[in-house]
Length: 544
Image 1 (cartoon, rainbow, N blue to C red):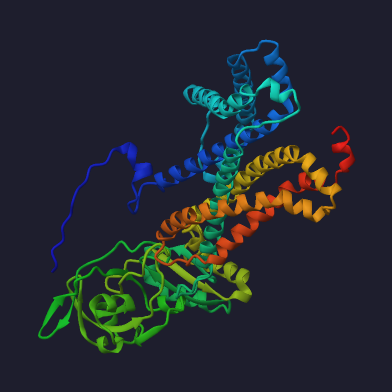
Image 2 (image 1 turned 180 degrees about the horizontal axis):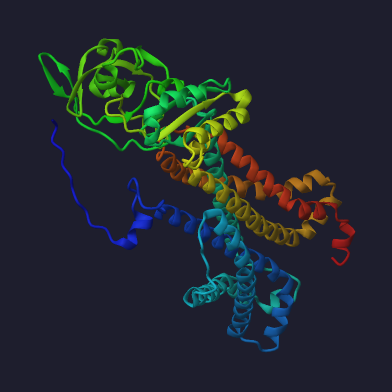
């Protein structure tokens, strides 16, 4: 027998929930990576909102430039102007915090129901103080640049009618960063949805859509044949089988395995998990054989000495031809028997794991689950019949069943919720980014309103003006795509690598994200660009 080494490790009890990922935990654990991921997305959204505030404030400065010029002429100091605008920024942030706390209370009710948590911030004064303190800091940081820009206006220039609004390079950089984050979220959402669609449509190698599972009770052992006959006499029931574990579970049971090599039995050199099944298990799940045969009640030794392997077990043992192993001596758990069949590989566990070597046996039957395949055309009739037979043979046991396809979908419940949260975060990030883009478009239009009037007088058409005003926006969004694509590829490739079976990211997916981003950007600025392009030049040039 191969030697086995057991190692012990200490872990803090408080670390178990987020940092432990062992099988058979007392309750489903959390994941610290999810906390980091959602925290990072929240930080990105705060950054987008802060960048928007900077862009909108600097754009708004053009409308307040004369006010600043007059105040400076009247003796206002630069520090007084900075303090005024910083105070305005902090007050706006505090008002936003008050609104956020109110809306956050109701949003948490939905979030707690969505994630099965019980999060609350109202009873946590430390958290509330941190929120208020963070709001003040965000207000100061977001208002710092606009305050410097506005307080730096020169009265002689402003009162002559010239406008200023800070460095255009910084405003454009902020728009690029905002849309880069939004595009990363768009790509992430698309990749997650594509992977989930792949998981839901992948051929698992067994029938799951018409199978229901129930707990198996040992009291059925003595009269299971009668129970089985009563079930299958109805036309809506195709088959029923028992097993120690069922697909969508984990392969946690294993013993030592040996195979014939020359004149002796030798260790196979790899772990082979085992599942106890009965004679009808493979038929119930429509699992095909590639060599040999199924367990048979007509061969008495099958119940004690017969083994069925999957293809992955043969690969682990270095056997290329399944037929060559049939009727060969094989030992498992110290019991010498022989291999009677080889089944085609199927995904017993989730697609996060590769297909593991499995051996199926009947020895010392100890079953935990009953699987029943129901005809698709008479599903409700089949359920009613199963319940009737159940109450006849197990009157004291509760009739509780689960659908195998639901069990399979639950394997990816975390990913499904992540996709829904990513969708919400993406929409929120895009909306906030569009507000910033709208502010930039407003500022650009105000800066070039007279130029547009002159161009129209000289014969420029509305499409020419629209192209002129939209060109910069399109360039900025395309630059944002160049920044976002490698970032999105890196993180989504790492996420996809948590699956043993995954999609390959296609460049068309990234092109789609670029098209969506450009379309959203153009729609956002269309109201301002159309308004500027349709303006009568006489209204903008009459005082020149």
